[in-house]
Length: 113
Image (cartoon, rainbow, N blue to C red; front, side):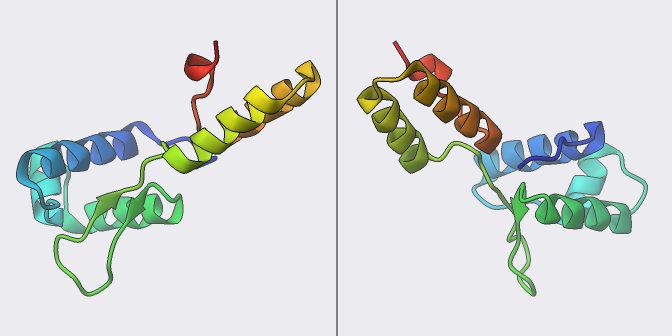
């Protein structure tokens, strides 16, 4: 996810995440509209489509309540980066790995001693 989210997009993602956590299924577009005080279902649909394009949300076409929030915490990738950093003897290599992890949205700084 290289593009930053707008304030409204972040609110939508946060709302969907909280709804999923509380209900174990995703909200309808109408529930998102009501929950965030948006003007129309089509406004929600447009925001959701943009978030899917940005790689923040995933949805299954033709399926109701199929929104999923795509998290940027990839445990497999984080483990690979941490292993590579541990095996590295060069500060330059470590810095390059940290920059690459940052671009991917991985937080390795907190796991490096």
